[in-house]
Every structure is written in structure tokens, then in C-alpha cells.
Length: 223
Image (cartoon, rainbow, N blue to C red; front, side, top):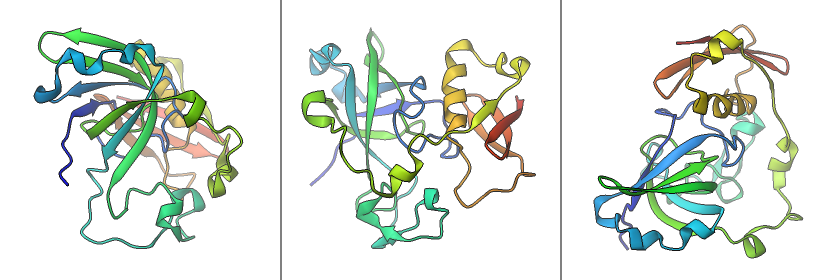
């Protein structure tokens, strides 16, 4: 069976580091979905504007391997505990498929790129291939009483973000809140807790550097 790439997402993360670990954690993080030329027919998104959220089925394009392991080490467990691959959302899977629920902000109809989907809360790297888009149906897709396994232990976890105003103002206004929400989720690998270390990642055309001490993340530079 051949899977066709129907679109690619354009986000503020050119590399994997810094991307929120799940969709919706940074709810104001902006991105846009641009269809491949073959699928830029406006009729293909007719009626999609009536939904507030959509599902994205996509490819872990930077984590493709020829082999697979039945167990993986989730970063949120410190990288030292092995869990079954199908009990995690690890990118290292037999088939490197990702699934994300994002908010559909609006649909823009353009002459050169066709219909462009503007979304919020995506956890995808810039350029990630998308295989399919489906509407999110709250009456069947939402299960408030569902068990979350080991992930429930981290539910509600966030850092306090200290970002000096003069640094934050370097960013265009639409990018600011998404960055703060992403930082609050603690971008560090789960096994790195060196309080003296300065971490950095690309965010759009900017580089963000930060340190973490206790439950506080301090932005030290945006350039």
C-alpha cells in the first residue's frame, strides 16, 4: 500500500528540539498546512470550516529506521525505564506514523498555494509530511474519563517561565505566546537536569537560549 503525501506543515520549529511533546500543550502555537499541488482543489476542504479541530496523520520523517524494538525509553520517564512501544507515542515505531489533534483557526484560500489551513497547538516540525486530515468529532473522539497510563503522572506539569520583556519583544507578536507555552512544557530531554547548562533551539528565524533551575525556566537570550 502506498501512502501519498497530501500536504506539509510549516511551523516555527526547523529542528526537533523544543517541539512540544504532545499536540495542544502549547495551544497558541501557530502553524499552517499547505497542500501538495495535486491536492490544492478547494472542493477537498468544503465543509471543513464547520469544525473547530482536526486530526493530522503524519510521518516521523526525521526518525525513520530500518529496524524496530518492542520496547522504548520514554523521555518523560528519565530515559531509563523501558515501556512497550505500543504503550507510548515514541517516534521509533514499526511504521513511523504520528497522530495529532489541532485547532483549526481558519482556512485561507490563496491563488498560488490553494487552500491553506491555519492551525493552533501543533507538535510537528517544519516541513513534516502529512498523509491525511480528518475532522475531530467531540461526541466520539473525546473520552474525559479515559486512563492515561504513565503519562498521567506528568499531567499538568509545567515550568514557570521567566522571560525578560526586552527579549520577548524581539519576537513578532504572533509568535510570543506560543514560545512561552512551549518553554513551560520543559523542552529538555528527560535525562538532562544540569542547572548550569544553557540550552538552545531554533524558533522560526530566531535562536532561543534558556536555563532551568528547580521549577523555573529563565530565558537568557533571543537572537
